[in-house]
Image 1: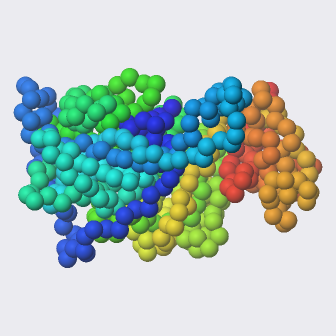
Image 2: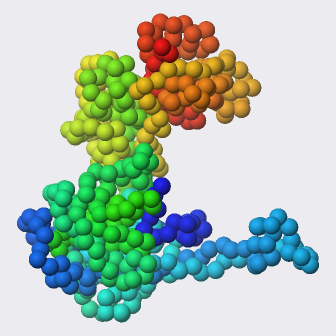
Length: 486
């Protein structure tokens, strides 16, 4: 549903090569608490000016075009294309196929200078896998660039050029204080049209999904704007009416009009120092798999409101397990911050430094409990929302069979696995609408452990009008709430 402002279809082959982040080109700075960018002056920026011309002129000199070359593997020649499309060799063609070879493929994006010393902010997908990068300034001058640091999880990157003279930079603003409905300006290089200026309003804040699909990653917290954003705008600034950057243009809705997304500059400011010093971002890890609290699940877990993050799995030897978090707990507060939507939790946990001892407030069996967890360093994408396929209006209609060694082997389960295997799901049933799938392993029903089809039948037989199943799917577990057929 979504595509980045640089064509994904074009870049897919190049991105698959995977270029390791370049080593930082700076020595450690003495004052790590002082930002290397300029903070914009305080003041309201919601009013529309008489003209956007002065603002565009003021900011454009700090906006750059980033030309990137990547290596992409291509087929040997037209004979391979003939065979691919028609299923046979080209008439008269003999011999073996030519070996695939690599060619350089160009692409473009945008960025903006944040320090006179040549530091430039852009999107990770603009510079990822780059063999060569050239930054083009408003006056047409060009400088080679190197990667300082990248963070694929938030699509943020910091690059550096060496200039004989100080560069014009743009100040950074406060994306939290900007109000929805305020005027904003986007500057970038859509379709190679350098320094294109478009204007609109801030349409919304805190966007993480569109049409039920996640926009980019687990830490999404995008600003939405109707300022025109197109391929090539990626990495360019979203400006308020005081000339301060409040967002980094990143993605567009491929099937939408006037729907663009930008990384909030406050999120970027929390990560840029790490990119400068270390070349990457270190995040906190709690060690849970979570899912949304639907109205049906809220009823089952004795919660007044459908808020918080429901714990579907606690990883062994994780900070969560050491803090005595349990499957079925609902996390409502983390480090003093309320968890309103379940995907608030990964963002808050990730932004908390490893080693921090934080308070975690949960609901367990309808009662409030307070726990203390000490976060560890995230090694990989270890905090993931469970698949969110529940519905609050369900009937059940599925069949199960006992788990044996042969089935366990087919499903990749350990020899000691317990539960019953879903062998069939009626596609028109509430079980299907709840997200239950053939091959799921049902391990609990209404908080009762299940080891046989009879146990499941008995557990469901005790339900008046609804039931909650805990199922294992792959390496994760999640809760599904279903209702009896009327």
